[in-house]
Length: 166
Image (cartoon, rainbow, N blue to C red; front, side):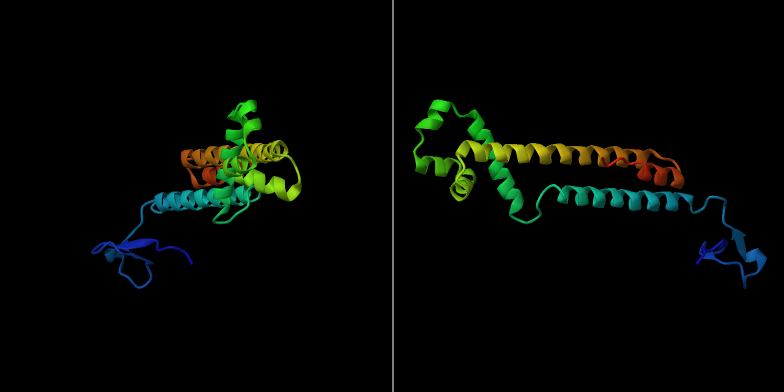
């Protein structure tokens, strides 16, 4: 359905001219809907960027309420492990290691790998995820800036289409 093309002079409501006396109506000015179209297009495209960003993040990180907690705990264990002097690490008893590195020690127990191997695996996974998520975030931020900066509907659509998610 098309939009109204005229408005009533007395109350300003938008109407189609059929059935009204010419003296009661006036043609809408050129570009009357442009501002609304521009804002609506921008909002829609920005929403598409956000959904694509989340989709790509989900491909890198496991979703779930507790998963972000597990990731942050593992990151803390990696940081702690990398910043503990070797002599202190070697002097920790098994209960102390379990208390200090619960996620890594639990995985080491299940897999039979050493604490160092598990920490290295955590670290490698974090590096891979961090790199991919940083790329996705940079693409989303650049894309949103380009969409906001574009001055026409077609330019906003072109800015969205030009986002390089790789």
